Image (cartoon, rainbow, N blue to C red; front, side, top):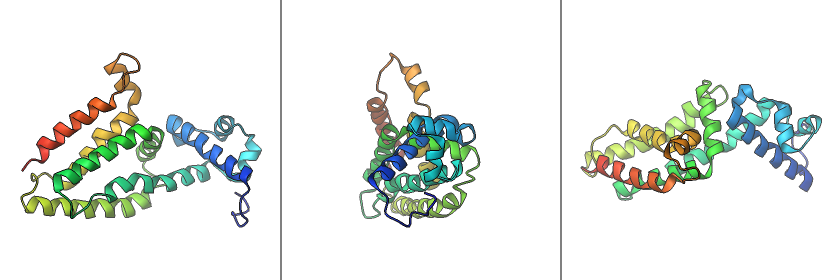
Amino acid sequence: MQDGGARPRTRIQRRNTGAILDAALEVFSAQGFRGATLDQIAEVAGLSKPNLLYYFASKEAIHVELLSGLMDTWLDPLREMDPEGEPEAEIMAYVRRKLQMARDYPRESRLFANEILQGAPRMRAAIEGELKDLVDEKAAVIRGWQQAGKIAGVHPHHLIFSIWALTQHYADFDMQVRAVLGPEGEDPFPEAGKFLDTLFGRLLAP
């Protein structure tokens, strides 16, 4: 909001802010940052453009707000990997959490993917900082499990990258997945889960 949020927001203000962010998520995930407009966001939110601008000063301000909230959501599944847990079970649980995120948060996944494809102009600091630090930390955990002979000696960072690729694909390319699988309406996630269990189970076996 333009007043900097110094005063507590009313119920209507909270409702409108939520409507704007949800509408923006819909528009940004479909159009990307460059293709999205404030007029589109206002229309989806059911608000006038001047009303929208009372809450957010620009398209970029809305985008940054969405991305800021997304980073914690994106990193939480990896944070849950327990160094004291059973290695294969911990990695497989991470795979399943990421696949569940692809199912439950497809718009967020596409928003993140669009930002990365544009060179991450609004997220570069978080990616090079918080995200990289966490991935490096968990890669070190995986490397320790490998050195102890508990899982196969695959490159830890590329293992994490492959988990991202093989789970987020189902959100980012949802239409393609469903069109190729057919018939219309088939849910790809149960079979995807079984496939990933088999794939990573074999990959990680020492």
